[in-house]
Image (cartoon, rainbow, N blue to C red; front, side, top):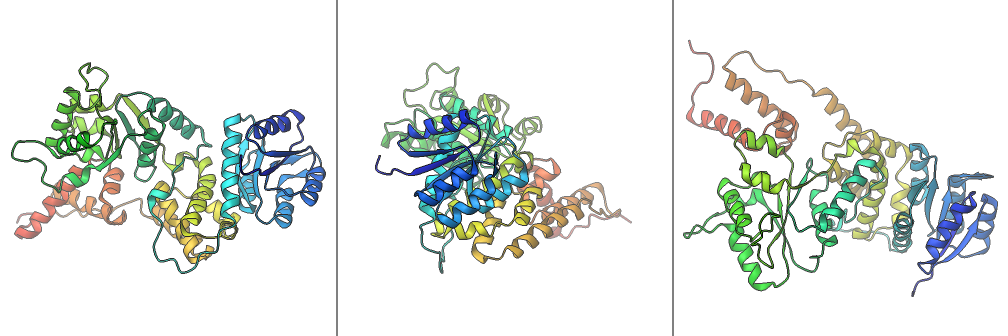
Length: 461
């Protein structure tokens, strides 16, 4: 290997230290092994060390003190915390001081190697020049390429995704807006045997505003995929985002493609050699949409073969701080910022606020908050933002509905009020109300028609 990083391991358990040492040496790294804080500090004073793996609880000290000293001696060093005592406070403090990851005992070789590679990337980021006067925000395509999975629910999601990626069967990814469904779809494609082929991403809500069928009755999906199959001999992965927004005509077209073998289905023995590998996603309850006759039942049965439910951030709080550090690292890379300086702004208070906040916008909202921290450099602004958002959510749990008017008018008032409180986001409002987006649009559309016609919907006298 061209780069021979030196890694220092400090762990009071002989078996654990040697296990980590053997794993890192298989990667061609030069490894130093210490069993006490004193031995580790001696290595730091006398040797060039790029990365340190340290146990939090050492026989003669603690890993946090070691990290603090390591940063003073080697400013660009990256640290990984090893712990069997993974409290939130210690993890926050260690990561704020410079740890790029932490692994909890018992751990596996892949976990060690993943932490190693993140640490190597961090040492490279720390040598980047400071960001100045950047004018273009980083593309979201560059953010969240990998998944943080410290929590049990997210580890299960990743395991499912990797297993399903090897199967040439439709996958349905479900979860709230902003949880990372698109990123998970790309991961499934990358892990699949068809990763060399094209990945086509279509947002179904856009199809609704386009000319859907030509004079021969061929839909947008069919035309697009026919054109792609001519140009590409490799298998195509098609990702249909917000499948619940696919118009009824296109739903039937997609079902027809499944039955004809253009899109691979397990019970379609006539599937073409280069049939489409299909991945879909939704933020709504498709089963409920079927019951409301807003989604085709047969299509739902074809898509719901390998479902994956991605949990919201509030249900995987263990991931919030590690994920925040990863996003901040990737934002710094996109903006060419000095990561060590940006990380220092992540005070214990901010980390606690990030942990306590409910994150209705999930990973997308977390990315926006961290972007503000990076751009303004003012941690107080971020703390106030989270406090205001949290108090706003707590205060707006009730809605006043006027008694005057009929039931439809009351319904429209309630829907309009929820849309306002969701910042105009109708999809979020629909989720809050537990209704399909098309139902919400219909209610609001009726309101607009009443206003335009000048009809009164109040009590008749």
